[in-house]
Figure (tube, rainbow, N blue to C red):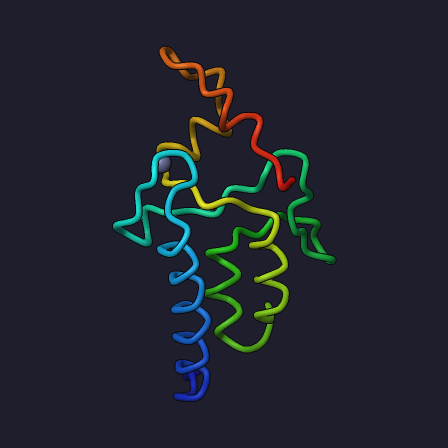
Length: 117
Ligand SMILES: [Zn+2]
């Protein structure tokens, strides 16, 4: 099925706004803000990740943005609600946050204790 021009424009709009949020915030931990693909939304530990109603599967925000553009499966409101539960972290800091047991050097308590507060 061909994707309409309107849908492509919509996609670009959501994608641009999501990327703007990434660049504006930058990595919460190290301040990186160069490449939008290297910046991710990290769910703050303790928040509940979005799950599909049918399969109960977790859907990444980046995937929501792509799928949300191919129709209206994920509305911008749904995406922004999910983003509100996250901090922006670069890929390195995201892994350090999610897998602190794999850190061999620095103590990253400041990331581990991040909260929405
Ligand atoms: Zn970082």
